[in-house]
Length: 167
Image (tube, rainbow, N blue to C red; front, side):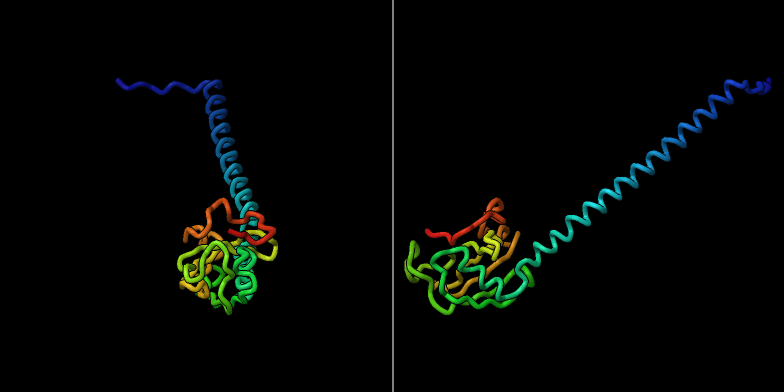
């Protein structure tokens, strides 16, 4: 036996129309939410990325890195560092014209000593590791690379350093 289709009532038609409208409205709201999320993400990127670029490029020249070395450590004041880029904005090979001052580290015991670097705004921007016992050859790292190299701690990067450290 075959069932004959029942005519649809006005109430069924209204229910179907309401369902279709609600589905379309939800889809529209989801598209709008995604669009707002994308717009928000793009706006955040527009603010964050230039700031990151500025931070990354804050010490771009060899001279700027050389100037940051004595800013971090009293014993390195007056040593006249000269730096050469190894990896742009990240890693530098630095040689001091004179040996560091005698302080807590005796002469001939500098190898593997680590010291922070301080930028011209008086903030810790990286750090260096002595490559020889005399303390005249250093490998310096800027930003997060100094943290990765375990020269400075992650909470020290960016801290104010109004005067060179001593001891």
